[in-house]
Length: 362
Image (cartoon, rainbow, N blue to C red; front, top):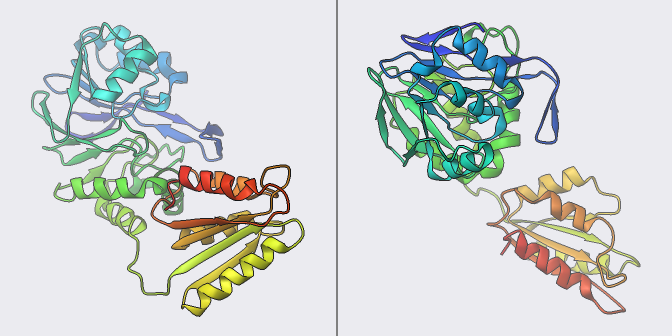
């Protein structure tokens, strides 16, 4: 394991994984890194570990740098296996180390890794921890991208350790963004879109918490350590998570599936009525529409009307597929309504209404 120095007594001790890595139903074609950090202060501290697959290798290599028995704190910002996976292997060697994390994360770690016997330091928002020569300040950042997450800031060195936030999936051996040999900004934006964008309100909360911090370096858990113009990347998150002020007419997207054309007639009548009031409408027959384009239009709209004929007491076509694709997206502030036609029992509209309520549409 190479130790790469970030600052005085702060080192990268992670793992570069240049394989095509499975990740959240995706394949990371350019690989990734699992960034772990060692602070060799009076009270040696590790911030996050590496993927569970590399646990033994990680601890063996770390042992060449520091005696694990001397480690006093292990900070876990996020419990997923690509960050906390090597914790059991490390904890087995660092027997006296206290695990520093949020209350929910502590309960999860105890259950996941059978760590009920270990001592935990439970962190609340803005708590600090003196590790002997450096001060760690913690901020809870729930749902970025899971409920238990937090971020860590080293006050003396002005370094932010935000775990998944500000990450990029690239297997980069140069590690620092000012040494990057290729383009990575687009990868940075793609990561935000896939992982953080569905949690936009929580991104805004996080930005509010860190805006008064003097941040010179951002050291995330994946991809480049952002030591060149860290403020630029904070600004990018700010821009990507900001909803522009309404400078346009209200928008409504109407989607439907039909058997004989009657539901289509209803959709067209709804569109005509809305347009008379100045509402911009888009109408899609899901039989021949591009679902990605429909989803994009829905996310840009203020409201959605969903229609279906009834067949065998259920919806027809791929309405359900479209609505399931909206799970996890930011749609709960939008208004919605269901419509349909039937010659039988008419359950489709009721089923649609139930799904819309589940999506927290109003």
